[in-house]
Image 1 (cartoon, rainbow, N blue to C red):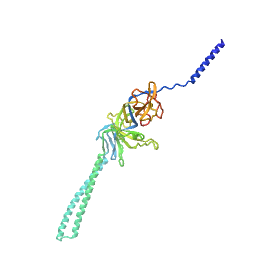
Image 2 (cartoon, rainbow, N blue to C red):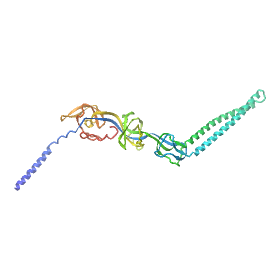
Image 3 (cartoon, rainbow, N blue to C red):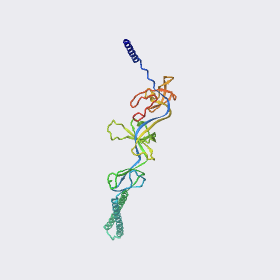
Image 4 (cartoon, one colour):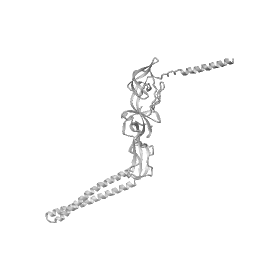
Length: 391
């Protein structure tokens, strides 16, 4: 009985060993094909950029005269209309200057009256000398002296006329400076910053001292930084849309207005190998005042669009850089067969198929891995565009 049990155990070990050896020598079954179906969708070829939202028009309101800021009539965030009084500077210095210039003007006017009276007297004296010289009742020297007095007085009047014009200009300047002590809003807008406080002394000898900043925020300008690799592909007039961090699902549409010719200055890096960007500008309505100065905008510039076209994931392509006519693999009656197709718009996620297939055709996926991409599962797609600018 004991020999029988040992024999039975040995037979079981032998059978198990033979089974595992057989399984190890069997070839692995070929992997199942990953496929996707041709479907209709909307495609866009785009350039991605990060932008900053700015006010359409910003004005720094400053003091054109020196003095103490006596009164500030607005607060941060106030909305004001053009012409509204914003601030007042102590006007005592400008009032005294106006009084001085008016006094000088009066002095010159008095001098002119005096000189005109003298000229009239000298003219009469000269006329008498002319009459007397005809009758030889006076000397030539007296005639010449009378002429010299008359001519000198006429020259003094000309000089006084010049001083009079200069004095009037001084009065106008003093009046203007006095007016500058009352600072009014140059545009309608919102007070976005206050740089000076009441009681602060403002000095405008070389540069205008900024008191506050007004901005027209009913319309905003977005400055989108476009990389040098993509800037040659975009041009004014192209459609753009963007989202902000607070409203990622709300697309705001606009039109690219201009591209600044010079690169964006980067004060944080002096390396010659750092990336170069150019500002693309476009304007957007902000009548709801949701957009604020300094917000970040995720901008998409549309290079090309295709609506309701036949398309499939780009992983149906054997070569990811394929364009024009190429060959894809189609599954028909359970068999894989090559099929020539013409490619259209490629947004790096899906590619348009212009001919060679119909909606519902099953195509073989060729998963590939490149920097920034991932292999696609059957019927799947990447979660988003590759890192970088264009997609």
